[in-house]
Image (cartoon, rainbow, N blue to C red):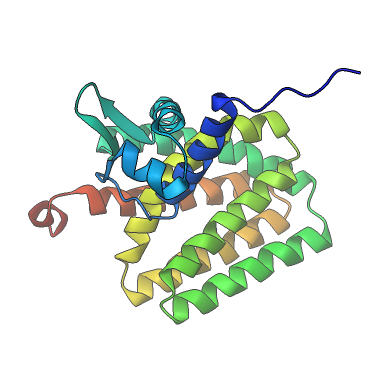
Length: 227
C-alpha cells in the first residue's frame, strides 16, 4: 500500500497565498500597503519561506508588486490596468450571463433576487462591507450557474484583482449612489429572467462599465476627480 507523502512547503505556501489573497480582497491590506514577510509569517505561525513563495504567486496574479531588495506591496490599480480588467470582465461576464440565463431555474432566480434584496437593505443602512460581500456573492452565483468550471478558474484572477478596488470605491459612494449600485443588481436579474440574451449581455456590460467609471474616479487626484 502506497502511503501519502508529507505536505511540503509548496502546500503550505498555497494556504498562505489563499489567506493573504483573501485579506487583500476583503480590504484588510489596502492598495499600496507594504507586505512584510516576517510580520505575515509571525501572524500565520509559519516560517518566512512559504510567505515568500506565496507573495511570488500573488505577484504573478497581479495582486502584489515586488521589487528586488525592497520588498512587496499590495498592487495599486492604474487607469490602464483598470481598462484592461474591465474590458476583459465585459467579455467574460457577458458569456457567463448568457450561460446562466440558459440554465436559470425558478430557484436560482429566487436566490439572485434574495441577494439583490439584501443588497438594497445593506445600501439603505449604509453597510458598505455587507454590500460588497453581497456583490461578490451575487456574481459568484452567476458564475456557478454558468456551469463552466474552466472559465471559473480563468476568471478567478480577474475577479480577485478588481475586488479590493471595488470595495474602496464603494466605500466612498454617497447614500444615493449606494442604493443605485444595489438597484443595478435587481435590474440585472430582471434582464436575465427576461430571456433575451442580448439585453442580458448589454445590462451586464453597462453594469461593469459603471463600476469601472466609479473606480476610475477614485483613482484620480482630488482636483481632477472634482472636475
